[in-house]
Length: 316
Image (cartoon, rainbow, N blue to C red):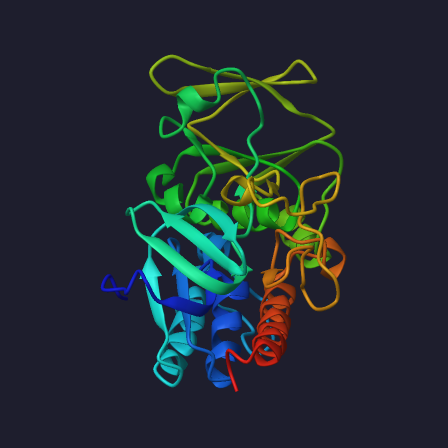
């Protein structure tokens, strides 16, 4: 990682995001000999919070943190080939000046680039209850693998019915005394998780309900459900999806769909020349937000960058 950057240098490519889209874009860019800078905070992105990954080819079963580090190690190995660098920082805003993109970082640095690949992923969705934020760190969590350890032999709840929620329930069943999973309609995602949940005696499914209220004083004590029942809990893990937070590019005029996901074509190109989207924040891959699709989009974006920079004569 580097903190010694020439602020006057115009990078051929800046990649934003340490997830599968960002690191795979970096890997391909390095092999194309495109000098680039990768900026991010969380190694692996959201996948680093996953308990177990069983659907990424070549890894029959691997934890989220493990595969996140493998992504980084692989990309870093080839950064030396292209004289590229990695920087732990946060991009606050991006502006366009003629053909150059200017990135303002939380550290105060300003980075210039001819092309940008945005692979920042999405943010966890909150339930939206009035007192929800008050209980974060006091019983409410959005990451089972991060905080599950603190609820050993206790009673916990999981909100959601997606793959993320299902694997969270299974993970927590190995730690907690009892797991209640609250699902608005029915279980979704891979059926293999459904079977394991239904066969696990420590997991109790509550189908067709929503969490209406968090009850507690100094910490979470229970939740009230839409069916009128109250369930006593020590912890509540929220896994109801995510949303694209495009605050960083709000001044650029990027085209998005009605849900806020970046519009890209088959080359991962946005409506702005030299600016590409990859991973969970785009409309690509039919909104099928998976490790494999994010990594693929990163590779496609890097290939498109090569084409763009070659035409401009910036790389040969």
